[in-house]
Image (cartoon, rainbow, N blue to C red; front, side, top):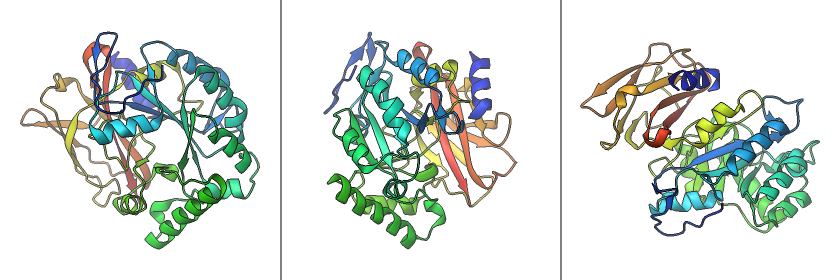
Length: 346
């Protein structure tokens, strides 16, 4: 299994209500502070392999998720649990889709509806309003939104890199989308997905001021109430990274309970950054942890301080753009702890 997780990290890196505190058990397992959020873009559009998942791959994943041990819920239920401190059943999972491609209507929605799986669709308003080829129309989005299984999320207007904009430009981009949602849907989404998964403390503050209750990035990690509610992780899938060994590892992952995370901001100024976190005392076996920076090609050096403080060290600076860190270790009941961090170098 150690070799499996190493290969996966190097390669690229049911509906249950949970409102209020829940101390549920699933197959004899205690409820936990953990959830896994999955992310997709295109379905059956093999001309775009970097953002597409083949239908045979998606069908196989859905068959896995139909197993009784998985708890597939609307994304909002996970957010509510994180905000209120409620526990979730083991293997709680939410499905999200970005960018409103037409193949969602043709290929994903029928399959998800047949499985009775809820999902969130994050819509960037400019390509839809422009009636760009290959995108859903506003009427089709309204049809999707009428399905109780579907939630529409905020994804800004232009789908440009918000962290490269001035604060005024980013605010205008978000406000433009807000006005269009109100006009076309009669409601403004209160959950947000950052284009390209890129975020910063300044962007987080804009979203908080505008009443957004949670926002999502695009990096690999299980999530928990300890996670940044305005930078929550999602596991992304495309043709290359949709193999079932990786998928099963992800949907069975659990959040590593950590605090004192450094760096505080995902936007890196000191490069290489000082990375560290403190693992909850109840977690045993930290000597089995490995951490893989996406740019390094090997595991980083780990330094243990005072037993449960972990410092991650490497000398090679992060490249310009997006990078990630994945830390994993075996956990109870043969499920892996998975903790990740994103980095953005301008």
